Image (cartoon, rainbow, N blue to C red; front, side, top):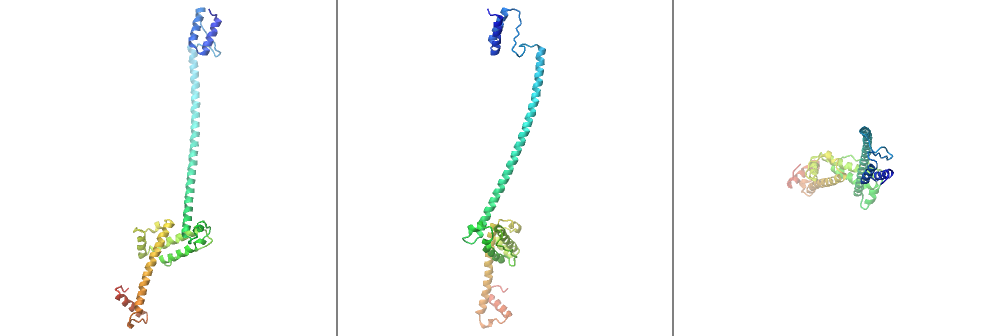
Length: 279
């Protein structure tokens, strides 16, 4: 038979080890030793059995603690979400700024490359690479002079911008491009020139304002083509006039030119003989 002390120890060990079977056996042994005795097991944390009122109070207290904890957790989660949202917003703003800066840098790099290529196209033969890196306009002298000559063919009497060798190459190039645009736009006011422009433009209606917004490389192509077409037309007219003069000089004595009036009559006669219009 076990003593009460031994049983009590067995109960404590079973409780500590959460051994339900051993605990029940110890309780049964204790009842055998002291029938009618209530068992109270002290674990250092209070009684092992509670009455209804005590349990109700404990449950209510526990509910209050849990409610307070829930409130603190909700407030904490709200604060953490707000902080996280603010952090994400800052990150998005930062990324947006970075993307915008990258786009600006890419656009700047593109413009610089296009300008370098344009300066190469404008440079004299053999000087392309130097012109692309030039800080002044010394390599654009020839291009400027050629542009002036062509602009005069396209739009006689056009006003030319000033040229400064010391000016930045980019500024001078844009001035040359502006002169080309202006010459074509002025030429479009003339019916014959407009017909040439439309032909060069693929038969499409010419919009002077839209043309002014075109990239300089496209403007140069139309400008050069129009200048050549106008030059050929001018040469054709000049050749026709020289033909008139040659016909007059090689005709019989009755066509001798004595004054302006006789020249006019002789020219008209020569044109009629060739089947051309008199005017």
